[in-house]
Image (cartoon, rainbow, N blue to C red):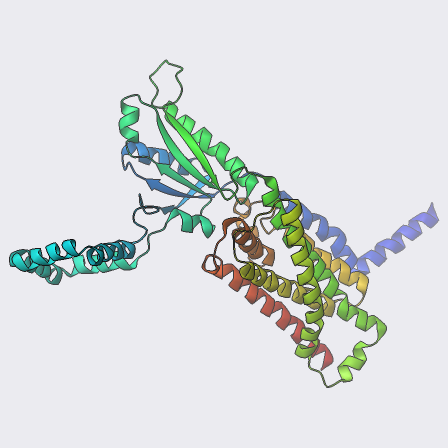
Length: 434
């Protein structure tokens, strides 16, 4: 017993002296508890909602308020009624009018004739424009502005749902006639779309029950007609496969390059590289190129396999997809090189590579758990996760067929991340060599 206690005392002293082991034992469990406790949240909240209100009555405003007050939806945009179909922009309306004038000579002659034969009308119009600057400024502002359209909001992932309230909703419920509202759902995330559909059905049913006659069990007067964009069948494969592509690409790219410089250190060849007339930046780029080519071929193979085996659609541009994949891989390879410059052994490099690639890509990228439901401080952390931007671009290109303008911000974020990690890896190597 005395000998056992002596060994225990000796081990306690050794643990206290080894601060790294002590911090690992005390900090890591708390870290994982906080991460999993907050990030593992299947409740969908703060769903970005846009509204197209064609009724503009107290009944329609009450329905919108019911969505906002539920705590599940955040009203972020208001779509002008008919903007998606009849009047995309005021510039389009002016162009359409000019086109009609130029393509219809009788109409043009009639217009000129009216202007020339009715000077008071012409003078009145010019007078109003010149004497009323606010009217002129308002017209110019309306012509130059581009009111948000449903397609643009959905393509850019700015909203997850659009509530379309038909004209005559208030009149229908007052007269006891059934009315149907339409909800458009962004189906690139099948799990979120399914949950949001349940929220919408419950809210509309509850709001419609308010207009039912007292003491009756009649069906609610207001019902909902959901339409799912980009993934009408809500196939989970179309949601999971893009995330798996990002996960596999990140993991393989980071782990492969994380071993490269460490391998040079363990074999002693890093000293020969240091003595060569080679800068740190050139060394980092040279280390990146072979792994980039291999990782890009692997990513293309994974995408082709997903399209062949799982029916993954491709609605966008292949060149845009290759650009997004290339930017993501460059950032992942740079992250691996930075890990390799920090670690001294391949075992440590492998562990760090898994830590910085596995957990963020799986937990904090929006792959499985919606970012909007995470606490604010974790949402801020996700801005440093490149898979977050890559997933939005990947799903948007393959499922939505969006163009570069819809993902310019996300592609720019991937460029910033790649430049930052490659620069940090180069700077760290340069400091070690100097």
